[in-house]
Image (cartoon, rainbow, N blue to C red):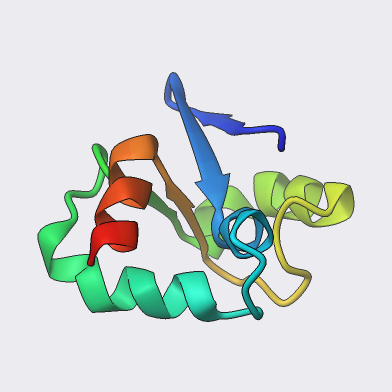
Length: 87
């Protein structure tokens, strides 16, 4: 699985996490939402709003790294992924 580099960090999209863990679409998003209060933006995840990141979101959609239905992008770092797995 090819990480998505963002602000110098290796990250994975929610789609990549669903595929990595062989779980249905939306499972990683639900886990993220469940742990959101414990996660720190900029350390555990990055939230990229559609209006500011359209080109990147379109590129990642076309490469299949994110779901085609993605509007706003959430990218998890290794620490964020570990927290949602433990949560």
